[in-house]
Image 1 (cartoon, rainbow, N blue to C red):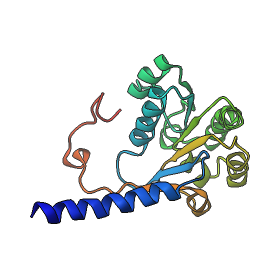
Image 2 (image 1 turned 45 degrees about the vertical axis):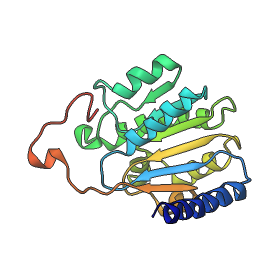
Image 3 (image 1 turned 120 degrees about the horizontal axis):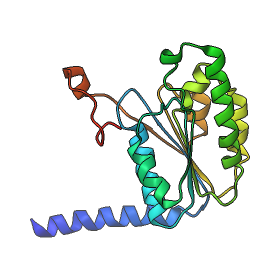
Amino acid sequence: MSDRHQQRQQRLKEQVDARIAAATESRGILMVFTGNGKGKTTAAFGTALRACGHGKAVAAVQFIKGEWPNGERNLLEQHGVEFQVMATGFTWDTQNRETDTLACQKVWQEARRMLADTQLDLVILDEITYMVSMDYLDLDELVNALTQRPAHQSVIITGRGCHRILLDMADTVTEMRPVKHAFDAGIQAQQGIDW
């Protein structure tokens, strides 16, 4: 039994080693965390924590976030991560297309600056998919900024309903799928767990 296990593990190791040896390109990647499940923003900021831990320069733009406390921001700003926040909350709260569009465009200018910054290793565009789907932000403008970013810079896009063009551009796409959620059982969202 142990010989069979060792042989199986050796074959697995050889396959993994071959894939590692074949990955010769070094450049920033575009990641998309999408889907209807919980965890897209959490995954993005988990990656930001990892990058900070390796001494990388990280910045984040949060679209559709309100003024409420933000645990990720509280921690990451202490480690030099710049945050720009749209801060108007969800558009169903404001219900004002004109002011939401202006707020989006204002924070988008900060995102464009970040996407052109050669000092940044990772830029997070949190919930930007909604800005595109609600026509607050032109898709072509986003695509151009992503295409023209510094070659070493990685970007994470989060949000439901990611546009097909962005999915096709991405190097890595993860779709979060809801299986079960505490909120559906009437349990309140909790600070430190949900935000």
